[in-house]
Image 1: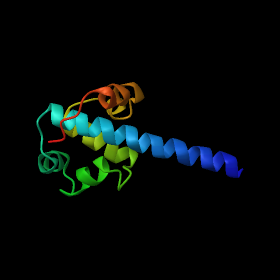
Image 2: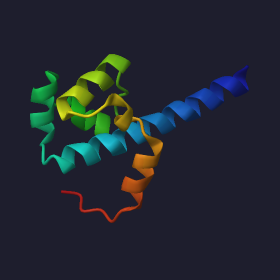
Image 3: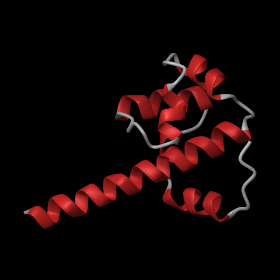
Length: 94
């Protein structure tokens, strides 16, 4: 049982990283600041940054709310292939 729990924990951590990577990429592609995204989503202005830094994990409702604010389908925020593409590109952390 402990092995299953550990495996689920690792997967959850991986999903958090996938979400964070895709959130940041989609936000930057739209040239949105963290504050503007928060405003559009109707959430605390610090929350998107905490999500991108993997400090917080979003609820399913929050995933949907942020996706709506970005104008994308919620599945894009959890798309592992998209996260891999983003992670393999050269970064300019602005």
